[in-house]
Structure formats: structure tokens, C-alpha cells
Image 1 (cartoon, helix red, strand yellow):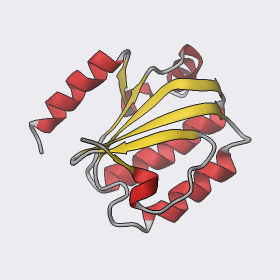
Image 2 (cartoon, rainbow, N blue to C red):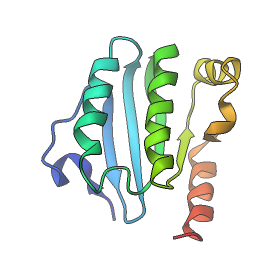
Image 3 (cartoon, rainbow, N blue to C red):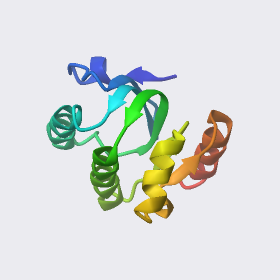
Length: 135
């Protein structure tokens, strides 16, 4: 059973996040709308605010791009920062429903191998089952 992140931490939801579902060993962040230069300040504020919380980034993360409308290069930079925070805590980051434009940005930057990319929710949940062997 999942718990709503924003209720759990009594936090306001930024415009780029549709929901964060909290499970025992994994959080699923569902993004919405544009993820670009216009949302960077909100993304930075969200990460800065919550990285002080011991529970934030203490689990593996799955990010769902299904409802994302636009992406640009600044999104890549923000996800590298997010990934760095997770790796420092020995946690993993998987991306699912990744738009082809974002994949091309990752490939051009030669960083697609930094992320676990899942083409579908089915593959993402298979990946989570694999990770669960480590929990």
C-alpha cells in the first residue's frame, strides 16, 4: 500500500509533480506538464527543501514521464543532480515512459547508461522486483 508523500511530509506539491507514491523501499514520482527551464526553480526548491529530510532519497526512485508535455536540456541537468543525491546514499533511479526527445538528449550527452530506463510500466515493475532482492 502506498502513502502520499505530500500528506506524509505536510508539503505543498510543486506544479511539475502529479504525485509521489511512497512504498516501503521505493518512491514513485509521477511528473506532469513541462519539465524545462521554466520549472527548474521549482525543481531546485523541491530538492533543496526535501534533501534535509532523512526519509527523502533514502529509497530507490522510479520516475514516470507519462504525463510530461515538454522537456529540454535543463531537465537532464536536474535529473543528474537528483541521481547524484541518490547514488551518495547507495540508492537507484529508474525512468519509465521516457519521451523519445529526452532519450535523445541523454544519448547526445552520452549519459543514458547512468539511468535505468524502462520502456513500460511492466518493465519498470520487473526492475523493481529485481531490486527487491537487494532489500
